Length: 164
Image 1 (cartoon, rainbow, N blue to C red):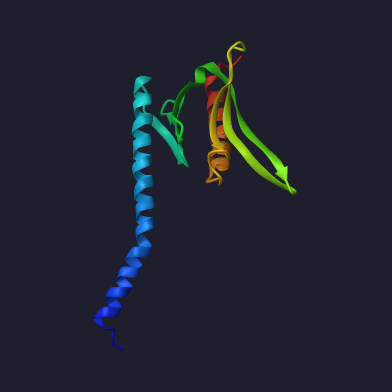
Image 2 (tube, rainbow, N blue to C red):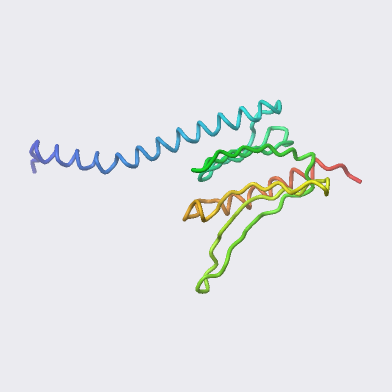
């Protein structure tokens, strides 16, 4: 069986054209992830910290410093860039936010996030919004990320709080 040059050329071009969107998507995501990581590292440096554990998910990046005292959050949306640093020494607990409603018997997630309860009851809760269905139509691991970070932060809070 012999393939002529024309068939080989057309086949190669077709494969290249089909692969280009995937290559561009992956490259754009890697660039966005690096840019967000630089912003998170800058924020950590302002608090004399270095990022230890981190997670990139959808349009946000969550990180915790190596000492486990701060949680850093960087989110990019069409409207704005949100950056937050939460000092866990001032926090009692971290609660998951999972707001949804039932449509035709199916539960639809509307918002996901983390809510930090401060020690000082006069201070408002700190909320980090991980997902909002007004901005994104599909979940991309935000639910698992929320559960993981709630567990991770609460475990860290137990170690930071003094034994009475």
